[in-house]
Length: 222
Image (cartoon, rainbow, N blue to C red; front, side, top):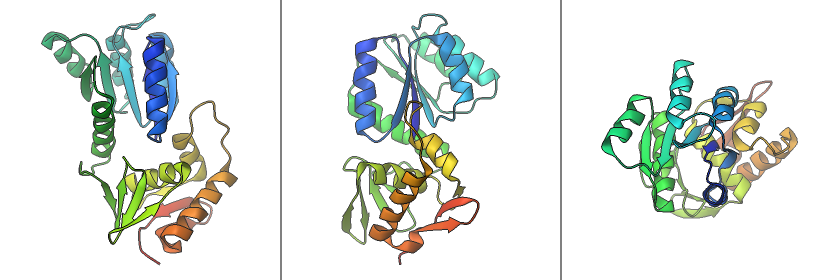
């Protein structure tokens, strides 16, 4: 899953980026509201974390411009401002959730998970479930029939994306856009390797290949 973090506090942005990357997210970071308006609309983010007190253009104006342009990406507002009036103002502008500073990192993690699942019409349960598999995002492993199956970081990121989009045909280019940040070189051959590794661990029929189209998460055991 690819996230955009818009935060002008550099130490906090560095801390959040490192934490989110450990959780398996690809993260792009911006510090200026004017840059965020353009990039938020031009790149395929799964979720945006937006501070309100930004240079260049205030966060609420950034959000208003995104929503006016039809951007439906979930937006979590992250700000030190704590008044009810400002919270309501943010939600009216189109925010999907609101988290005030300071906050516990685990709360941010759980709110992100909930927003990503809600955006895809999935239940917000302790573990992500799809077609017989249970993905523990905290431990970054998958369970089937009560047995843990260990995953590498890359396998976890890929499987989580498949499980959030069960039954959908996903092209290699689409997967690359959502699994890597803007600075990482995207190689479809590397994706093929990770898909094959998942098939060896979970069964070949779990991920179908649709010739000329991409992959489809089926979830059937081999």
